[in-house]
Image (cartoon, rainbow, N blue to C red; front, top):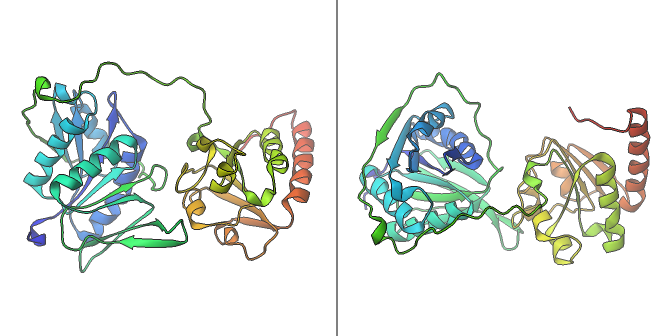
Length: 343
C-alpha cells in the first residue's frame, strides 16, 4: 500500500427520509479543519434513494465535493448494500480520512467497511486533529475506564477512519452561496441478491427523556450520597424547568435509568446551562458535557477536576447548597409570575 496515493478528507452523510442527521453536519465542520490543515478537498458522500437534492446542503455546510450514489435498493439502511457503495467509492477515489457519526448505522457501517478495506477504525472519538508532516489522523478518546485520554494512530493503512459521537463537534454556519462539485456514481445492486429485507419501519413513540435536546440540565453524581438525597436533583430541576441527568455511578446504583446518563457511555449534551452537582469530573463524564455553554459545578472538594471545565464553581456541600438554590429560584419564579426564561 502506497500511502501517498491516498488524499482527501471524507464524511459519511447519514440521512433518514431525505433529512441529513445533525451529526453529519457537525462532522463536516470538524472535517473542514482537517482538510484545510492538509490542504486537500473536503468531501461528503451520500447513499440513498432520491437523495441527490441533499448535495447542495452538504456543500453549504463546508464540503467542496459530494459523492452521490442514488439507487432504490439504498432506500433503507442495510449493512450489505451500503457497504458495497462505500467500498466502490473508497477504492476508486482513495480518501486518506473517512469520518462517520457514532450512530447505530454509522458504527455498523464503519466497522464493516474497515474490515473489508483492512484498515483501522477508532470508535467513539471525542477529539480530532491531524499531524501535517506525517498526515496522520490523531483520533482521541477516553480509555481504561475514562482514566486516560488515548490518541490512536493508523500508521500503515489507509483510509484512516473514526466514528464521532453526536454533539461533540460543532457544525459550521451554512453558507448557501458556496459552490462545490457533485459527482454521481452508478452501482449495480439487485434487491433479490440482498440477504436482508426491510419489511417494516416502526417508529418508537415511547416518551423518553431526550437529554441531547435539553437547554438546561441538572446532573447529579454519587457525591449526593444516596437515592433519597438524589431527589434534591429532581426537585431542583423541576423548580427551574430543567432535565435531569446523572453520572455512570448514579445509573449503576439504580438512581436513574441509562437514558439519563451523561458521559462517554451515555449521552453527549450541549445545553445552554449545565449544573454538575456532586460530580468529581472523571474524563468519561467530562467528554459528554464539556461543550455546554455555561457549566456550574458544586462540589465540596476544591480540587475536584470538574472545576477545571466549569464556568462557575461553588465549593461546599451540595446537600446544603441545593436547598438554598431551590428556595431562591422559587422566589425568583414568584417575582417573574411563575416562569423562568433562559436567553
